[in-house]
Length: 179
Image (tube, rainbow, N blue to C red):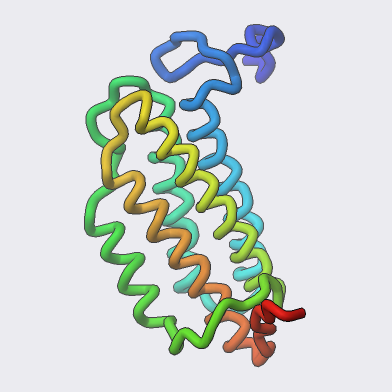
């Protein structure tokens, strides 16, 4: 089977149902941004794999699988429930956030160690994905678990960045509004 079909050469793509839509429609933007986030988390997993944190690597792989499920859900117009996504998945992210979270002392400039810097890139894409999903929700029903999960995932990535700078003994650079 060839990967190229020539059917998208005029700016359209097929949803899971087979319906053809413009490649820049709100639904495609939403699941495309989820795909971009998943790819960036793939790069994050590479950096995490260089550390001895196999538990976090396994968590990131579970997150990637959930993002594939969310992307499949978003690409399926009329789907009632997100594939395999539950409130327990959101609670698990919250538990990981609570385990890593240090006292919040202010906003930090993105960067630091490589894992933290990549987590920040992922966080910003998660926030964009959330905005795209909100836009889609204005046009079509979107299950609340999807927005909750992506919102919590961006929180997780923010805390994960702080946690990894701390673990690597890399000082955070705090935002200076007068700089």
